[in-house]
Length: 310
Image (cartoon, one colour):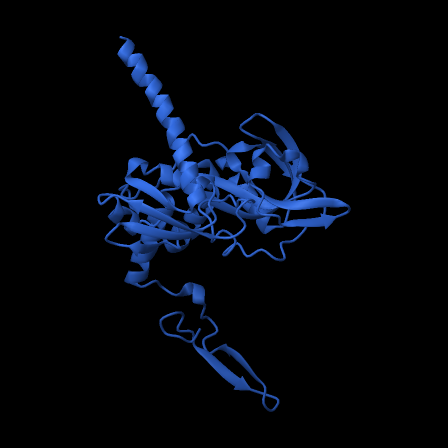
C-alpha cells in the first residue's frame, strides 16, 4: 500500500512492547478510496466500462447492470455512446436467463433440484451439486455432481455427457459428474440437502484433452490426431488452433497434430472444414469419417437422380 503507483499510502510504523509494531496512516483523513484516478487509469476504466456495457440488456447478464452502474457512479465515468465493439451472442438461445442464478448457486454451494429435458423429449428431475459453468460454441453448460445412478440414462444426453467415470458413493447411491446444457434445463429450485463439495477436480485442467465439454467414455486417454489441410485453409487453422495442443507436424504437407480425446465436438469441428481437410490418423477415426462421408454422398446422389428425372 506504500507503493506510489498503487496507493501511495502514508503508512508509518510505531514500535511497542519490544519487537512488536503497529501500523497507521500518518494522516488520519487518508483513505485509499479517496485517491484520484490518473488520466491513464480513467482511460482504461472507460474502455472497461465500454466493453461491459455491450452486455447490458442481455437477460443472462442482468447482474452486470449493478456492476457497471456502480463503476459509473463511483468514478463518474460514462461509457462512450458509440458502439464500437460487438460480441457473438445468440438472442434466441434458451436457458441464458438461468446463468446468473446458476453461477450464484455454484459460488454459494447450493444444491439444486433440476428438471432437464433431452432433445429426444425425455424429462428427468435430479439433484445436482453445481461445480462449474463452461461456455462452448455459444452454448452454456453446467457441470456438477448428480445424485443417483446413471445406468438408466444410457440413451440420454446426460449419460453421453458423463465425464469419464467420476463416480462416488453416498448412502448406497452412485453419484456421478455430468454436464447439463442450459438450453435443455426446464426449471430448477433449491434442494434441501447437504452440499457435496468438489474435492478432486481441477476445472483448469479437466477439459484440457478435449474440444468442447464432452469427455468420451470410450476414449479415456488422449490420442494423436493428424489432420491434413489444403493450402488455402492451412494458414487459417494455424492462426486459429483447433485445440491448445495443436502443433505443425509437416508444414510443407500442411499437416497439424492434436493430442486429444476424440469426441463429437471434435468431429463437428473437423466436418466444418468440408473438403479442405483429410483425417490421416488415428485409423479408426479416418474410417469413421469415410463412412459418414459415404452416407452423406448417398444423400446428395439421390438429389442428383431427382434432378436427372426432369
